[in-house]
Length: 402
Image (cartoon, rainbow, N blue to C red):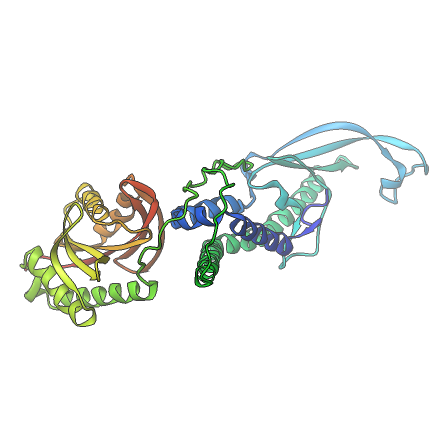
């Protein structure tokens, strides 16, 4: 095999994206609509991400053997006869690696103009050097030159692969949301025709777990049934609510003497006071499903947004607050927030505990990109229904005692 010279990496990556989109487009409509979106996107990311090649240079080793070498391969200054073969020592260098072996064939868009023949398995490569003159230094120089070029070319491949992996979550989300919008648009069109619409009943009830080489991935399940549409808070409106809460908390941090000794209820009421002019119905301590939530925004009879206001008192209490917030929700793709007031002298050590504590919660799905210091975003599912996703923001504000 000619290493890094038998295929175009850019084309392979484009093919990977196209295959992912085809899988999304092939999902049964009702299952896709009913599926926990965050879990499905996480599944797609795990399945279609590419594991870059990592060479284990410290574990390389060499082996030797005698082999008959044709005269045509000998250097010009050797006295040999054309058409004949002569015994020479062949030294083979073995280099283990981890990652997807197919990348060894791919040429990156940025590259060095070089390649060499190697033998490759799923976890190692090897190349040969012929011992022409029993010159140890010459053999070492030749081997190190090849190793250096493999290392350099692989760095180019790795950068391109890592960029693909970084962009993959957004591409998966775009594919899923685009398909959902298309399904809902077509469904609305059919319903507007004024004639009965018969749904297909031939799709199996559950998904099979796909077999993916070297990856253990469980595809989320969802019922293939028609469900009535549920109200959904627009993402831009959700971000606006969080922005208002964030701005409010930062303003409180700027006036510690005013807020440092206030209790949770007083601090919560301040958020309600700021949110109320922006939205028609913002109430505190409104009874909702399993208990009372600190901040609740309602639209008609539906809960649009819930938030819990708590003082930070450790990871276990934080996880309990997550459960409390999840317990108030019933929607598919619900949205919520936890507003944490940190009384500790230093904020940094608390922020370091937020993500690990969230990841240990049994309903945790994935972390999402962080907006700003002290503003975390997560995907969860409801306590009693893993198909119903929850977008949860955690906003932390430093209010040390005066």
